[in-house]
Image (cartoon, rainbow, N blue to C red; front, side, top):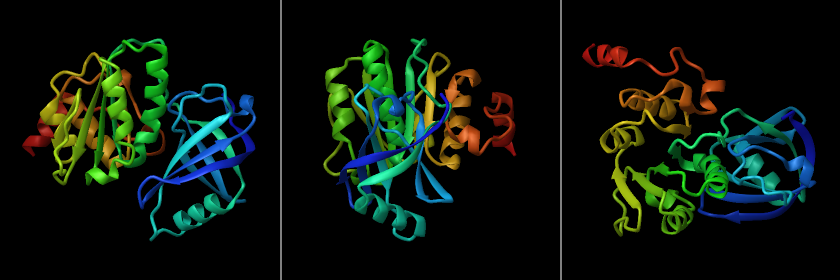
Length: 259
């Protein structure tokens, strides 16, 4: 899809935590078309465009949802928060990104997100549950503390309603009260450590990752040792922070571990 520049109305600005807020936008239905997993860019000024994952699958109603992390120490983050909260309309460019749901595949989905990386996974999950509710989905969502899982209730609802959906909570700080629930599991530590301890063979999965380059590649390295298929792993990180090889061979990982 060719990117389009348009002006949208701001309909909702909602604090989900002290550090994350949700924004809902409305525009012309035909101009809001996007594939699940794509992102848009918001105009901060004439020369500054800031990317955000689109947090909802396209359903023809002309609405978009964003999850925005607020970093008080970063100037652009402060400017963006002020702009979104005060503006009635925003200029945006969409869609962007090739990390999109393969709707023709029925391989199990392994979705791995850190922080607001959940936004991209939310769109992919919504589309997959609509298109093929029997397709297995495992969502691994990582944060430092449980309170940073700003929409934890939503994947819990998916897990309760869909037998093929499993939600994995990953935090570095042990949550209180303990994490419980139908098809809900808890893992303590970094996300790459949790994957190494909790998975065995991912050769049959379509894998999507959303987070920082360091987090994404740490997870890719773990999954490479679990038979990850290089042609079935997707992340926006691969476009803006590429490395060679993208997925290391098991042999190279063993050599690195001995060095």
